[in-house]
Image (cartoon, rainbow, N blue to C red; front, side, top):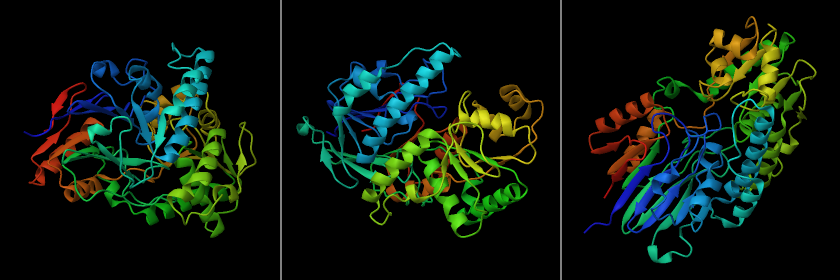
Length: 448
């Protein structure tokens, strides 16, 4: 008799939202990620932990420290106080900083009374869960502490997405389950490409760019050249460029790229400005990245010349890396964009994804009427351009991964409906992948 494995998606499955997946292995249970959606209404922002409140949860595994995979962790521990919490060492450090930062941001939103909100958890609650974090390096198999009799073996694989990001391999009773998390097969400007196991029986696969037919055709070197031409044109005419970025991951990657381009005289040596929390994340990268990549030079980001931007005044021409990447109201990226939109000599360059429902998403897609409403401008005068420097694998890379791992069952997650549907159809066309699933939220699926 085969061992029973069941799966439940606790987050939405028709959009990119709070990531949380429940895996039942016989009498044992594992929660993979506990994210939240900072931009969503309170009820839809959180995973449905109520769905599994009567199920065993022996371990909570965090794939990486972005809020859509991490932000509901204190609530998950409130539901499942006896669960062990696992992540890589960099994710443990980043998680502490991101959770406290989220509380500060949410407190500011409450004070501004822009929306009806409550505190999801307190600083004291975060402080009280930090001792639960247990971290393991890549490629170091371990068993769930206190539940060794489960014989559930977990291994982290470098996912190549941000510092500390991990694919999660779970081996139990001769069966192997692999969760990609957010994965990037090829190298970025700092991080090297993801590593994967040789094969698996069940694959939980992200599908972020499943509907993007252009991404596989984009060559990184050509995109860098286009980025250089765009920046030089704006800067040489006396303008400045705003680059909205996520504080974790995108800030560090783009800062290193800009530094390389300036050192090689491909860009003029103009001031580079950063906003506050991105600087904090730089410090974590400098302190920990050499432990993942031994050839990474210590304090590399600290050696790059930049200035911390605390207000909206700076010397021009300049390049400004400003959070938030989604450009939510009352952030520096939002405020600077409102200034830049009125000036033809300035420009805004997007270097990653932005939720279409956010101000950044409207700007990125150049929805002029919405831009005028959101930012309070009469006309969009500055130049807006999008560059494809993704931290996710494109859809052909994901298909190649399915071919390589040769799973008996593939479950698709972390994608809009068109992305999931495209991946579903193409994986089925491979011919030897009989079971491909797009789960419904809360649906319990028997895998073995």
